[in-house]
Length: 157
Image 1: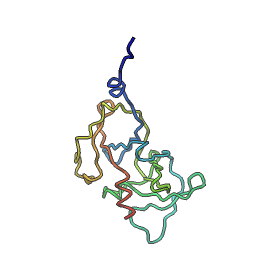
Image 2: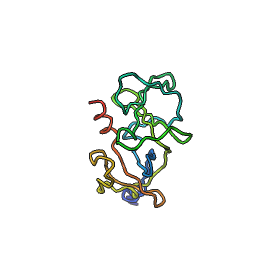
Image 3: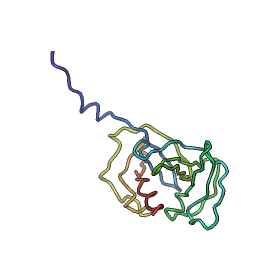
């Protein structure tokens, strides 16, 4: 009896973990595996670093590691918002170093690949199109897919 091939069906039903986060009234998403997302952490003490760039919030001790925390709001030129109970730091590894990205709120959700459209780009004027890699949706809530490696590479260089 020949082996049944269901590769197309499996791909259509594939889901991946995405870190979904909010900045202002917009939601964004990043592929957890592709972007080396390690954790979404609650805010702890962030120590300001003198003479650092404006978008660098400071550094924090996270599980014994010193993590530089950047504000994605400031990086993208969005208006300032005080840190509150919903604020989170997305911890990612970039070029072997932990980096934290301060966002208004965040969670990890499993998203079906059928709900991702990588052909739609430049969907919001607030965020440079070089960082946008598509759009997705969760229960009819759209989110903009970002390439945080591009963001961090620009920040580093």
